Image 1 (cartoon, one colour):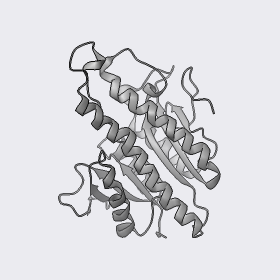
Image 2 (tube, one colour):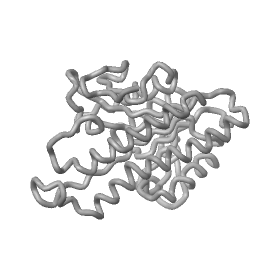
Image 3 (cartoon, rainbow, N blue to C red):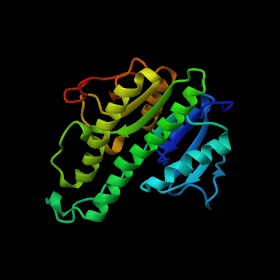
Image 4 (cartoon, rainbow, N blue to C red):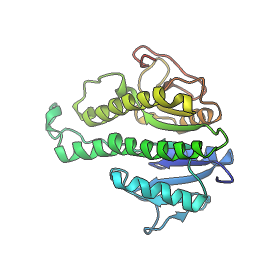
Length: 246
């Protein structure tokens, strides 16, 4: 088992990914970052902060076993917190026509945000289950996906077709996983940030609010529903059309 807990951030950009990494680092976690712009070569490297940096295409389902293997080899254990922060969107080719979304983009968006996230969680579940059987000391485990309001509301914009499909599809299987495996100490969450009043945060997503929420989930995951609507990250905010039936 690792000497310090590990957080794995899949989709580690300069906004939410960076804030989450910094916050978990301050809590004493070892941090592993994965993105298409990860390391300069095939081998993992280290950032100036000391984080493990891995390059991988998260739309490639075959990449995930190698990602977890690299984390285990470099950091000495299995991540207890996995954050899936990757997403993509392919706009409609013709204004106003959702069915003009190019199918290659449609497929890639699905492969990244639905299939990729599912495989990331599947691999985490497999490793967590093995550790649990080997008496891992009862450490709680969390898989957290960065979501948005498209999982709960249909916004009349054809450019959101693939993003809305991905968020809503993944919210379903994440909720199912949480129901099935919560008693094992494995929690699965969707984090959907809103502004006050319940409108989507959109391009104004607050990185520090996400970091606040994710670290609260890591400290004590039990009080939270699987689908979390929030504003500042300190508490669950229930909005109309904001939550799935528990």
